[in-house]
Amino acid sequence: MLNQLNEIGTREAIAKWDSFADAYAENHGEQGDLHKEVFLNPVLLSMIGNAAKKQVLDAGCGEGYFSRILARSGAAVTAVDYSSKMIAIAKERTPADLQIEYKQGNLEDMQAFRNKKFDLIVSNMVMQDLANYEKVFQEMHRLLSDEGHFIFSILHPCFATPESGWEKADNGEKLHWNVDQYFYEGAYEQRFGGQEKVFLFHRTLTSYLNTLLKTGFTLVQMDEPVPSEEALKKYPSFKEDLRCPDFIIFQLKKTSA
Ligand SMILES: C[S@@+](CC[C@H](N)C(=O)[O-])C[C@H]1O[C@@H](n2cnc3c(N)ncnc32)[C@H](O)[C@@H]1O
Image (tube, rainbow, N blue to C red; front, side, top):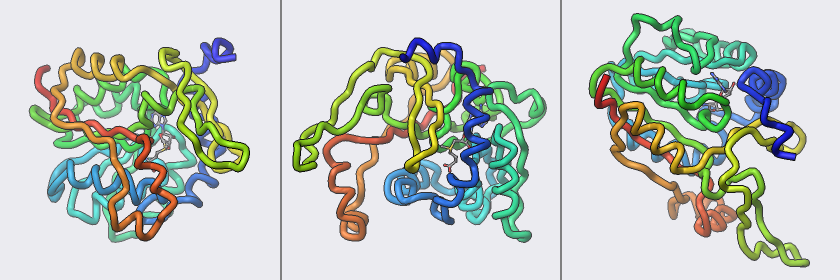
């Protein structure tokens, strides 16, 4: 079954994102969706620190909520997404007084940005959605100014594998999280929000880390976010996320040309 997906590339994956864009955006407000609000935003924003006046690229901006957060904090934001539908929604959702430069483009080939340099590149839940992550890391490295930072979140590759999920008792109790096919690298299908299926790309943690180091990045920090006590009071069902992490976030620094 997984072998049949060997030929899937970024183009096929993006066609799915284009048709999924409306449903995806509907699920997102000014803090993103619930998982972004609870798990990703607090860590991303703490790693970013003060972004005011920085040249920032939001790589794979989707409907643009994080670009808007960054722009509201005073950053000069460029936002890129391969899906023209996502870019159209992001533009629509951006008030006229917020300056964000939106561009439709593939992160695997950013030649359109030949002469541009960024102090910071943020990419929220995108790297597992594209085929050629090695090329994207090279492009992100090229587009950063010296000592610039690259911060990205992904589904945790050790736990979100092509075959993973809760093992449940007959009464529905979640017994434990099953993981299989960890060493499979390539495309697999994942259902989102009930009906829509998108293609995701799995690689091992070793592949991610070694590729980043080979590209010329230094690891500054990593995080496997858990819900805060405050978030748990508001959303008690997230208690199950204290059992194993859904996400991992990397902060890297450009160290060599
Ligand atoms: C899970 S969504 C995340 C969107 C946004 N960063 C957020 O946090 O809401 C992934 C996005 O990555 C975009 N994407 C996937 N592959 C891409 C590529 N090769 N180049 C640019 N964007 C891509 C998709 O179109 C989609 O909007």
